[in-house]
Amino acid sequence: MKCLFPVAGYGTRFLPATKAQPKEMLPILTKPLIQYGVEEALEAGMKNIAFVTGRGKRAIEDHFDVTYELEDQISGTSKEGQLDSIRELIDQCTFSYTRQTHMRGLGDAILTGETLIGDQPFGVILADDLCVGEPDGVMLQMVRVYEKYRCSVVAVEEVPVAEVDKYGIISGLQLDAHHIRVERMVEKPAPQDAPSNLAVIGRYILTPDIFEILRNTLPGKNGEVQLTDALQTQAKEGRVIAYRFKGRRFDCGNVEGFVAATNFFFNP
Ligand code: G1P
Image 1: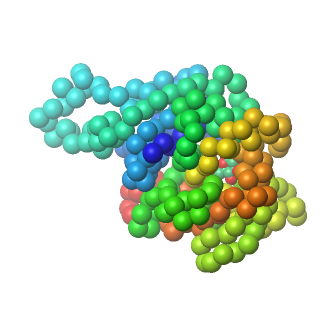
Image 2 (image 1 turned 90 degrees about the horizontal axis):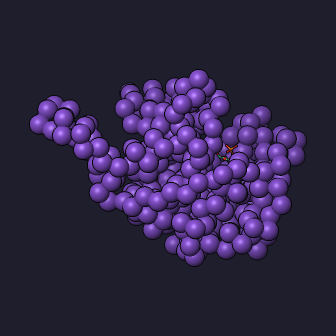
């Protein structure tokens, strides 16, 4: 039922656009990136939306709230329908927030979210990765994988070997065309050290023991507490499934992917 969105990152690759606004609020057409992510969570049945935020991210809270003056002003006009999509989310979801006071990596961000999640399996969406599932959303596909295997699930896709150093990379036992039981996970390996070219993208379902593991995970790559390292602890016990999702992913954390997503949605 719960989905965690780590949104404390600075978005330096989009400066100056992200100087005074969160990168998650950058729009693909008329909808901010974060809204695509929350829609995907809701489609997967995750109605409790939890954000790990930071300084300068207040626009996200305002986005997932009603704006009486605005709604009143456009009510009865041709623009009325433009708020339907966000209104639907506000009506169907709950939103909670906690702040990450220091930047110590994705693993630390997830651990900061523990207070909002508690003791249950939960989804994680990195809104930078905009996913278009075929036909169902990627998180809904992953819920089905979780229901079958009852352990953590990571979404993976093949990337060019030259780009493996941007991702968590996995290898393991191929169970069928779409499922791999993960044996190894490495955060941002050099191409010559990578166990494969299967990259984890920003979609996870995690079992709640991940919090205790994260508490005991030392800083890894780049001196940050890496979710990948905590998942490797579960993987050693056979408790991580990598899922080759059906659909497309746009890396909206860089300008090229952002433009590709914009073109895709403008002319699908
Ligand atoms: C994070 C994770 C990485 C994963 C990636 C997906 O990296 O640490 O394992 O492959 O997200 O987008 P980041 O992109 O935050 O550097």
